[in-house]
Length: 191
Image (cartoon, rainbow, N blue to C red; front, side, top):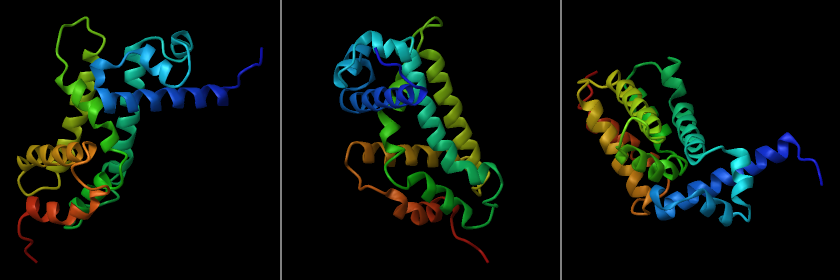
Protein backbone atom coordinates (compact mmCIF):
# COMPACT_ATOMS: atom_id res chain seq x y z
CA UNK A 1 0.00 0.00 0.00
CA UNK A 2 1.37 3.40 -0.97
CA UNK A 3 2.04 5.96 1.72
CA UNK A 4 0.11 9.17 1.43
CA UNK A 5 1.84 12.48 1.95
CA UNK A 6 0.46 15.59 3.57
CA UNK A 7 0.16 17.09 0.10
CA UNK A 8 -1.99 14.11 -0.96
CA UNK A 9 -4.16 14.61 2.11
CA UNK A 10 -4.55 18.32 1.36
CA UNK A 11 -5.55 17.58 -2.24
CA UNK A 12 -8.07 14.97 -1.09
CA UNK A 13 -9.46 17.32 1.53
CA UNK A 14 -9.88 20.04 -1.11
CA UNK A 15 -11.70 17.55 -3.39
CA UNK A 16 -14.05 16.61 -0.56
CA UNK A 17 -14.79 20.27 0.20
CA UNK A 18 -15.37 21.10 -3.47
CA UNK A 19 -17.71 18.12 -3.82
CA UNK A 20 -19.67 19.06 -0.71
CA UNK A 21 -19.98 22.69 -1.78
CA UNK A 22 -21.20 21.74 -5.25
CA UNK A 23 -23.77 19.29 -3.87
CA UNK A 24 -25.03 21.87 -1.36
CA UNK A 25 -25.41 24.44 -4.15
CA UNK A 26 -27.41 22.01 -6.27
CA UNK A 27 -29.47 20.17 -3.63
CA UNK A 28 -29.42 22.26 -0.49
CA UNK A 29 -27.65 21.59 2.79
CA UNK A 30 -30.23 19.29 4.32
CA UNK A 31 -30.29 16.99 1.29
CA UNK A 32 -26.55 16.29 1.31
CA UNK A 33 -25.00 13.48 3.34
CA UNK A 34 -21.39 12.39 3.81
CA UNK A 35 -22.28 9.35 1.66
CA UNK A 36 -23.37 11.68 -1.15
CA UNK A 37 -20.12 13.64 -0.95
CA UNK A 38 -18.03 10.46 -0.98
CA UNK A 39 -19.96 8.93 -3.86
CA UNK A 40 -19.64 12.10 -5.96
CA UNK A 41 -15.83 11.84 -5.93
CA UNK A 42 -15.48 8.06 -5.91
CA UNK A 43 -14.48 7.68 -2.27
CA UNK A 44 -15.87 5.64 0.57
CA UNK A 45 -17.67 7.20 3.48
CA UNK A 46 -14.86 5.97 5.74
CA UNK A 47 -12.26 7.76 3.62
CA UNK A 48 -14.20 11.02 3.96
CA UNK A 49 -14.46 10.47 7.72
CA UNK A 50 -10.69 10.04 7.73
CA UNK A 51 -10.47 13.73 6.81
CA UNK A 52 -13.56 15.05 8.62
CA UNK A 53 -14.77 13.30 11.78
CA UNK A 54 -18.39 14.38 11.30
CA UNK A 55 -20.74 16.09 8.89
CA UNK A 56 -20.62 19.13 11.16
CA UNK A 57 -16.82 19.22 10.91
CA UNK A 58 -17.08 19.07 7.11
CA UNK A 59 -19.62 21.91 7.11
CA UNK A 60 -17.44 23.84 9.56
CA UNK A 61 -14.53 23.55 7.12
CA UNK A 62 -16.75 24.89 4.33
CA UNK A 63 -17.81 27.76 6.57
CA UNK A 64 -14.15 28.48 7.32
CA UNK A 65 -13.56 28.79 3.57
CA UNK A 66 -16.44 31.27 3.30
CA UNK A 67 -15.16 33.25 6.29
CA UNK A 68 -11.68 33.37 4.76
CA UNK A 69 -13.08 34.65 1.45
CA UNK A 70 -14.98 37.45 3.20
CA UNK A 71 -12.03 38.32 5.44
CA UNK A 72 -9.62 38.52 2.51
CA UNK A 73 -11.91 40.90 0.68
CA UNK A 74 -12.42 43.11 3.72
CA UNK A 75 -8.79 43.00 4.91
CA UNK A 76 -7.92 46.50 3.63
CA UNK A 77 -10.80 47.94 5.68
CA UNK A 78 -9.98 45.89 8.76
CA UNK A 79 -6.33 46.92 8.62
CA UNK A 80 -7.19 50.58 8.07
CA UNK A 81 -5.40 50.72 4.71
CA UNK A 82 -8.52 51.72 2.81
CA UNK A 83 -9.06 54.85 4.84
CA UNK A 84 -12.48 56.36 5.33
CA UNK A 85 -12.74 58.67 2.33
CA UNK A 86 -15.55 58.95 -0.21
CA UNK A 87 -14.28 56.04 -2.32
CA UNK A 88 -13.79 53.62 0.56
CA UNK A 89 -17.31 52.17 0.50
CA UNK A 90 -17.17 51.72 -3.26
CA UNK A 91 -13.82 49.92 -2.98
CA UNK A 92 -15.18 47.62 -0.27
CA UNK A 93 -18.30 46.83 -2.29
CA UNK A 94 -16.27 46.20 -5.44
CA UNK A 95 -14.01 43.81 -3.50
CA UNK A 96 -16.99 41.93 -2.08
CA UNK A 97 -18.79 41.66 -5.40
CA UNK A 98 -15.78 40.85 -7.59
CA UNK A 99 -15.91 37.46 -9.30
CA UNK A 100 -17.91 34.42 -8.33
CA UNK A 101 -16.20 33.26 -5.15
CA UNK A 102 -18.63 34.67 -2.60
CA UNK A 103 -21.76 33.63 -4.48
CA UNK A 104 -20.66 30.00 -4.25
CA UNK A 105 -21.03 30.17 -0.46
CA UNK A 106 -24.61 31.49 -0.49
CA UNK A 107 -26.38 28.12 -0.30
CA UNK A 108 -24.36 27.06 2.74
CA UNK A 109 -24.76 30.41 4.51
CA UNK A 110 -28.50 30.54 3.79
CA UNK A 111 -29.08 27.04 5.13
CA UNK A 112 -27.08 27.73 8.27
CA UNK A 113 -28.88 31.04 8.86
CA UNK A 114 -32.26 29.31 8.55
CA UNK A 115 -31.25 26.46 10.85
CA UNK A 116 -32.76 26.58 14.33
CA UNK A 117 -33.25 23.77 16.76
CA UNK A 118 -31.79 23.12 20.21
CA UNK A 119 -28.70 23.58 22.30
CA UNK A 120 -27.20 20.16 21.59
CA UNK A 121 -27.35 20.44 17.82
CA UNK A 122 -24.09 20.20 15.92
CA UNK A 123 -25.15 22.86 13.39
CA UNK A 124 -26.19 25.58 15.86
CA UNK A 125 -22.57 26.63 16.59
CA UNK A 126 -22.05 27.04 12.84
CA UNK A 127 -25.16 29.21 12.64
CA UNK A 128 -23.78 31.32 15.49
CA UNK A 129 -20.53 31.80 13.53
CA UNK A 130 -22.50 33.01 10.50
CA UNK A 131 -24.40 35.49 12.65
CA UNK A 132 -21.13 36.83 14.09
CA UNK A 133 -19.81 37.26 10.54
CA UNK A 134 -22.95 39.11 9.48
CA UNK A 135 -22.63 41.43 12.47
CA UNK A 136 -18.96 42.07 11.67
CA UNK A 137 -19.87 42.96 8.09
CA UNK A 138 -22.69 45.22 9.29
CA UNK A 139 -20.37 46.99 11.75
CA UNK A 140 -17.72 47.45 9.05
CA UNK A 141 -20.24 49.14 6.78
CA UNK A 142 -21.74 51.19 9.63
CA UNK A 143 -18.37 52.91 10.01
CA UNK A 144 -18.44 53.93 6.33
CA UNK A 145 -22.01 55.18 6.05
CA UNK A 146 -23.48 58.57 6.95
CA UNK A 147 -26.21 56.85 8.99
CA UNK A 148 -25.07 53.62 10.69
CA UNK A 149 -28.62 52.25 10.49
CA UNK A 150 -28.18 51.94 6.73
CA UNK A 151 -25.59 49.19 7.27
CA UNK A 152 -28.20 46.49 7.93
CA UNK A 153 -30.06 47.50 4.79
CA UNK A 154 -26.84 47.42 2.77
CA UNK A 155 -25.98 43.93 4.08
CA UNK A 156 -29.48 42.77 3.09
CA UNK A 157 -29.03 44.36 -0.34
CA UNK A 158 -25.68 42.59 -0.81
CA UNK A 159 -27.21 39.30 0.32
CA UNK A 160 -29.92 39.71 -2.31
CA UNK A 161 -27.35 40.41 -5.04
CA UNK A 162 -25.20 37.43 -4.06
CA UNK A 163 -28.26 35.19 -3.81
CA UNK A 164 -29.47 36.27 -7.24
CA UNK A 165 -26.01 35.61 -8.64
CA UNK A 166 -25.90 32.17 -6.99
CA UNK A 167 -29.23 31.32 -8.65
CA UNK A 168 -27.90 32.57 -12.01
CA UNK A 169 -30.38 35.46 -12.02
CA UNK A 170 -27.64 38.10 -11.96
CA UNK A 171 -24.51 38.34 -14.08
CA UNK A 172 -21.10 37.15 -13.01
CA UNK A 173 -18.85 39.81 -11.56
CA UNK A 174 -21.25 42.12 -9.80
CA UNK A 175 -18.46 44.57 -8.96
CA UNK A 176 -19.73 46.85 -11.72
CA UNK A 177 -22.64 47.86 -9.50
CA UNK A 178 -20.37 48.91 -6.61
CA UNK A 179 -20.31 52.59 -7.60
CA UNK A 180 -24.10 52.79 -7.89
CA UNK A 181 -24.56 51.01 -4.56
CA UNK A 182 -22.07 53.32 -2.86
CA UNK A 183 -23.90 56.39 -4.21
CA UNK A 184 -27.24 54.96 -3.13
CA UNK A 185 -26.14 54.37 0.45
CA UNK A 186 -23.86 57.36 0.93
CA UNK A 187 -26.25 59.89 -0.50
CA UNK A 188 -25.05 63.02 -2.24
CA UNK A 189 -21.39 63.82 -1.75
CA UNK A 190 -20.73 67.41 -0.65
CA UNK A 191 -17.27 68.73 -1.53
